[in-house]
Length: 315
Image (cartoon, rainbow, N blue to C red):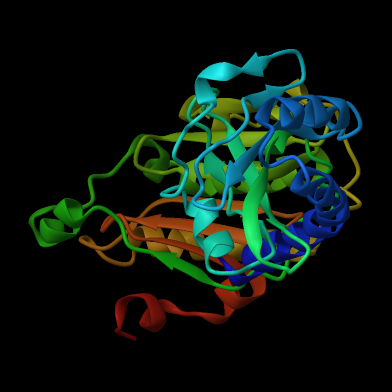
C-alpha cells in the first residue's frame, strides 16, 4: 500500500481501538468470575451483545485459547464452536504473548467471505494472571469508518507490466491505428469536451481507436466513444454546455499541452510507444500505458516537465 493509504488505515485502527477497548475491558472483568461456568458466560455475552452495536459475535476462550462458550450471535448461539481451538488464529498470537487488548488486522471471514476484524481482551484473575480471553468479531461493513481518505498528494507511481510483453518488446512495432490518422482532430475535440462540456476524466486508447469519458453530470457512468465520433465536431452537440468544472485543478490552457505530449509519446519511437493515456482535471493525474506494458501515474505539471529524453533516453 502507499504511505498515504497506510497512514489512513492506521488512523482508522486507532479510532476503532478507542471505540472498542473500554467495553471489552469491562466485559472481560465480568467474565473473570464465571470461567468455570460456560453456560453462565453464554448468558452474560448474550446480554451484552445487545448493547454492542457494531459487534457480530462474542466468545470466551480459556488460557490455552480453547473456546469455553458457544459463539454468541445476535439471534442465536453457535454451539458447534464450543471447544474450538483458536490458538493458531493470527489474532491470538499477540494476546498469547501478553498483549492485554489486541485488534487484529483485517481478514476475509471464513463463513461470510467479507472483510472482518477480531478484537481480543485478556481476562485476568485478582492476581493479574491471564485466565482466558474475550473475543469479539466485527464486520467492516458495519463499523463506523468515518475518516476521509485523501490521496491528492500521492506522487509519481510507476508499475511494471507483463514480463512476457516486455520480453518481446523489440519484436513488435507500432501499427498505425485509425485514431493515429486523425489524432489532431481527436485531441482538439476532447480538449473542447473537457473545457466546455463537463468531461472531467478522459482516457484515450490509441491502439484500439476509442476513448472513455466521465462527465460531471453523470460521474458514475462512463461513456465509450469510437474513432468516428471522436473526430466529428458534431459530437459536441450531444453534450450540454458546461462551465469549466469548479473542482478542476488543471488550468484550462494546460490541457492542450498535456495532449500534445501524448501525441509526441505516441509517435516518438516505433518500438516503445504510448498505447493509452488519460487525464483527470480534478485530481491532476496523467495516466500512461506504454507498449512495454509499463504504466505511470503522475501529476500533469511533472508530466509536462519531462521531454522525450526522459522517456526514451535520447534527445
